[in-house]
Length: 487
Image 1 (spheres, rainbow, N blue to C red):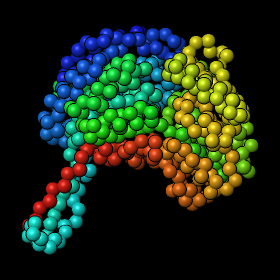
Image 2 (image 1 turned 90 degrees about the horizontal axis):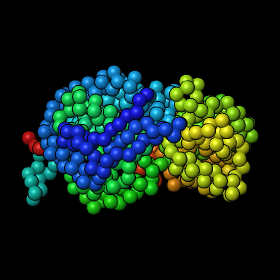
Image 3 (image 1 turned 180 degrees about the horizontal axis):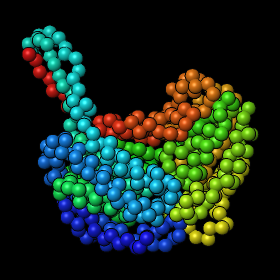
Image 4 (image 1 turned 45 degrees about the vertical axis):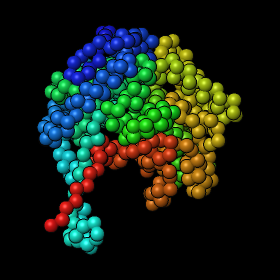
């Protein structure tokens, strides 16, 4: 793949030079430059928000079927460009070929397809009529009502680096379908595929100002979007630390929020579980994008009867994973996104050792990889009060924690600031279902790491605010309006 040079933002239907020039995007596997990305200023972000505000009334008034037709065309165009997008995504994210080809580009296509469907069943719902007695305020009568989902207005879509296309498509598609205009702000580390996504949306015919793009190497433009009175809603995927700052700053202008933040998923493994399935789920902390995913089962909470067996199975699993060049089809573990993230993960590993966690496997850099931001799949036996079991690491680090009975398993799982995605593995599905309902997590997988993309997705506690996915995604990008009448 040749070097990709991007220097322009997309504001009000025009490609314009970024005010702060460009910066380099680095391939985390090779440490070579993939290309250059536009570097916006806060003023650029404010201009994009103003353009989205100006375009919003006409877009909100556009018939839903016309908006849906554009969504379908976008899905077709992204699919047609998959051959170009995939190597770019792999180069700038370090995603393996397997992850990129199955989950980076195709899921972006499916999200635009999903939100090209008729949204009327979500947009209009009628509660039962109500008989009202006469009051000093109004005569009595049979009072009918309609609950309408109206667009919020201008949505700033700010995404994380792990799945740049998928995360952005998951925000932009339902927001546009509901009649909102958007300002797209990708992660600084890997924005190039998102720039191409915006170009595709322009080409398929979204009107000027409906989709706008700002990108920058620092947080200034994103902060400007949070502060802007032209922005009605912030949809953010990223760290809890940044999410709390967004919530605090957005309160001044009463921003609507959809925050999908950090996770420290607990995977409870009972002694009657199918251990191969449980270990396969737990191993995804290493094998699925090198643990750079908020839903990873990074805490294995394992019953003592099978504890030693699970630890040994995980040791063997880690040893069987190929760590290496993400473009090679048999590579399972690729690099972390940057040198800074690798350093951060290594500090977590060092802290775990200092606190007395038992290192079972990994813990260093793979000796055969001379370049790239790699960390070996790492396994610790630890206590739940250690930092390695409490902080989101966002890397290939898994901790195993023993428990004796069901109540203790639930207590350990819930003893976390986070509550995004937990798992329960047991041969007794009735027990697993009962345990799942006791977990303080927005999503719980029973004997599986698969997702149902129509189910609501989001977190409890410090893992976020709001839900998306399926129809819930449409609801997330809307305001409820009640219209009431009599007669």
